[in-house]
Image (cartoon, rainbow, N blue to C red):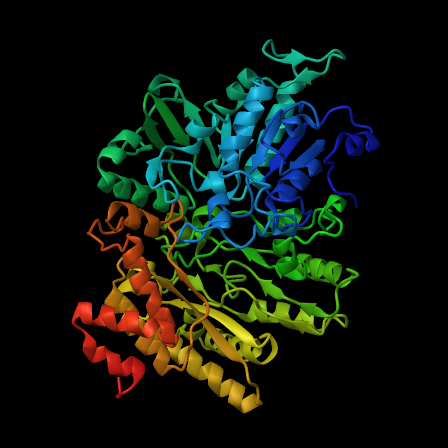
Length: 629
């Protein structure tokens, strides 16, 4: 197995004069199914196309990196990275992070801010007639008007800012395959708008490209930009959802919240409607997504011939994100939790698609053959660790469903929450002689484990899973995410009551005592989420102190594009109810909430006392610092 070519010399070693598609990646090139550029590259390769990758091109000066592989025959693809570039670079306080997890040696100077925009504009400067396709989480979450926390303003669809010809949202395998097949068909037939090289080979032009992707037969899960309402394929139809325009939302943020209710609903529907939004004289058209992938389609994506290693150009360099996942295996995609602050369902969808046991076992065995594998799998997981194999019992009901979450405000009676298939995977993996330990590093949804399924088999499987997880798959610390202790805040987060966490912790502690283990449960919490006030954080400090926690895994809420919580943060309205929501926005308000996480640190006590005095709640002081306070 060889990595996809990144230089002319590597292309020539394959006998190529020209690549069909060139991907511009803002991440270091790691040929692994956890890295989006590698997945799209291998998917295109499986379609018979010649694919090159230019990782982290220098966007300064003469732009020579963008010319490294020449002109592609079909299109340039911009892969802005496995993380949003701004989340990857900055903390919630807008401070530079300690390192860039997706760059060699964690270097910060190898990618621009908003690489989707920067890379597209560089290509436009050098190759004005070559189509550009954008995708990945940065573009996906900015497909319509969105609030940008780092610039503190509402921005239009990234198609307008970038000048790209097509946006693919969500996990891109299916639209990528369809696009490649349509374009090859165009090239195989004479077309007057095509250009030809000196040897008579057809080159895709932007004109022909737009004719292909902006037709009445639109490619699902794509977004196109149109100069006027007249240019929209088949016009505005009765079943389209026409959102408030970008300019209207700028003038009245409440309208952005109204828009987002429709955006989220359609993002999580099996059979969605087309969404349109006007920005100036132009119109953004979001075509409905594909139905959820099948197990066979997902297996195909994971079974492609990845080297599972960084490109040889990075020899001797450390890529932090790769170090984290090099001995892990992803079991499924999608998450039906619908948490208000999370982008997973908006990008991957709420319908869980699981790999086959056979595909998973093939990957586990591939990991065990790596020279640096010493018996420990760091994670057998997914977006949520224990959703593998779960879906609706009656798919027809799922196809009609409009809920963003299958488990909030209550678990859907149609959901089959059987943990048996996942237990079977764990036990099959542990039976492999080379595997000494297999840990679960992904977050666990304890509400699925503690729910009364009204089914003896499902309840027994959940109880068996808890025991199996705690006794055999915890590397000393188990991550769970209660996120808050206030039920009012949790309701806005779409998370279960904190009392469930207490129940799960009791089971965790009991099983550890019974087995003579000294493992820890590590809860994650968020401050400054919309709806959260300083008093809620004071009560959080008291509640977690009573459970004997000195919190470590905490974060200040970061508004990321295209989430319910960010919409609340920007507009001040809950898009589900259109009721007003309190938001702590100023640095002082956010700092006053965050300090309660660290009540146990001596340097925080004076500040906490001052805040409790300001709130008129000095009665809480003894609960934090004892009766002598």
